[in-house]
Image 1 (spheres, rainbow, N blue to C red):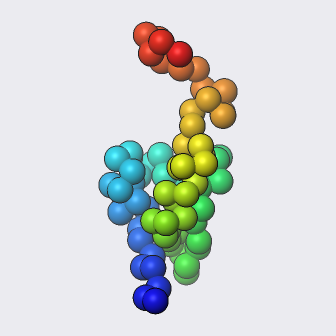
Image 2: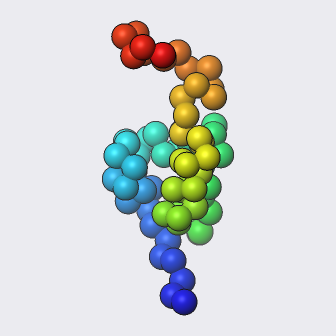
Length: 72
């Protein structure tokens, strides 16, 4: 089995459809799985996808208000 490649914050941001700053914020505040390799943070898509599936990106967990008009 081939090892999963490490991807950059920019690549994982593109994969999730969010800004790169959001990736760093999620890593710091919400436990987005990342590994520091040298001076850079690297990510594995499978780890990040599992984190998202488990609700890691859920805005309600941080107490962030739901935008008005969302019906929630």
